[in-house]
Picture (cartoon, rainbow, N blue to C red):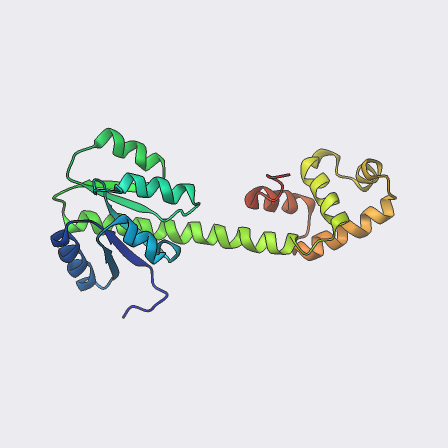
Length: 211
């Protein structure tokens, strides 16, 4: 039995017959399914914020599947996409996969082929959400640092080969003992044990990318 926390399959296709048949078949297999007749309806629902994947018609009127994908990418929404197409746009579709789509299927396709890609998309979505959660947690901990602690943390990350207390003290014009105190507080607040861990966390969460 499905729960509200289970990932969902979001079908976006302007063809009512395809929406109905796919929804029915996937629900019969036990999946959570929500169907939309247009890209706009999907965007208005904000379903892309929920766990799951998007089964997306490549060639819809007004806003095509490709347009929707580009819009989601520009908004920083990385929901995995499985394109379905009746137009055989293989060169375009291959490029779309590089832009974040899981795969594409040409209509008509076997349900087993779609299920295989859906399961792969669910795994990818879970992995991406885990990375996002770790990044969010890192940034929350970083926000608890004082201005001086952030200054020292940035120096340590930017100069890993010159990260002794004397190096930091010389750069900031403070005493090595003061640096030791701040370094200990940084590691404690970030819940880590070494400068190497601080460097790894900072890179993964892009802590200093906008500085």
